[in-house]
Length: 525
Image (cartoon, rainbow, N blue to C red; front, top):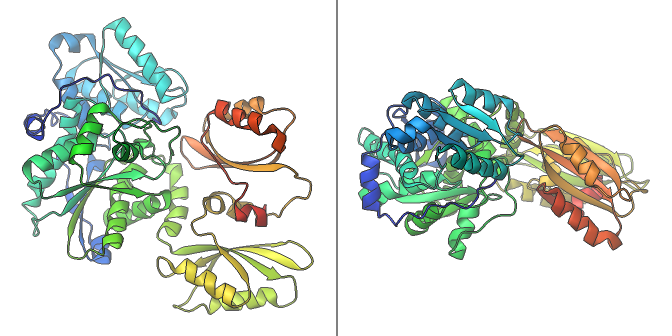
């Protein structure tokens, strides 16, 4: 899920016309259906542009992935189908292959990491897939799948780096252009496509550039999983050391050979989006459709909003592909929290006030009179710091983007030390839940924000690898209802142990960000 081994695809370069033929002849509709192209009325009105939503969340497996998987499987010979197929996946591709196998009456072996949530394992089994659990990561599962493929003579179905898979995904673009003809506005300025390994955008770009080259194809990546953008900028495929896991459907460390070639040649522009923007867009989509998409499914909408704000567009028509809706229900609490921050309906601030009578009341009165209409305090955490001052962590409702800077400036103008934390990840993910004050005994403390895999033994692995001479001085765990958890850890390790400390982090292998110099840590923890 979070990494992709190098593809062995050595296919000769195909042109957009070659792909056009493959897309027009793709066999996807035995399992896939033509999904609607819906107008997002509320979002269109807000943005003063027409926003169309391609509803791949309505597919039988709630994702576009079955198109490419089935098209590849349908091209196999009777002998290959008799022996069966294999893939490595912990997500939507696994379900697409399993459904394709059931339709074609062929054996499907799905190798999944042992860390895969039971919900996804059960979904694949329900479709007739033979689940093999192997290794702790996607890379481990992939390597085991290659071994089984060779031992049993199975055909490997790649999730993105295969021309037949790409052609299957390209039928999404074919439908979009056909459906435009039945809409009042038949013109389309750009289509926004989420990128993981690059299979979907490769298919979409080939079809659009062969048929309607004037339409822009704009790729979208998470700012912490941007392997394709970095690869295009460098002119060669780049392998990321770590990827953010919030949008697990696009968390790919290395894009495909063929998808990189196509994307570099045909995609017009790129937009990077962050977690808060995606959460806000999940809410936007829900308001317009009453459907909940997974993070990857909302990336296109987040990018449209960002693109419109940057280019000050009006009267344009944009399409976003809602590429999937496979999300654990428990993640919704995290999405709802961060959507308000992503839309900047809530600002977060650290404020230092004098520890004297009336200062608390004066701050509250000031918040009530910040201007711009009525405001509410969404969160208030108070902690005495000394006999002279106290720190307050406060959430304040806002009326528009960029307002948090103005609020912070007004607070400073009234004599309060104020820091805008609205875009501070440490503050949003941890500190707001654990304000408590600094510790005088936590010397040599280093603060790190980890992503722990959500599985038995993850914490024990961390603790067993920790140098016994180091002490844990702070620990905050928060499950997001996903395959990983946000964990904040304070570790007392002296500067003389720098080399050993960084060796420990490298061997541990969990994604992390060091927050020791973050001002919110100094104030509240």
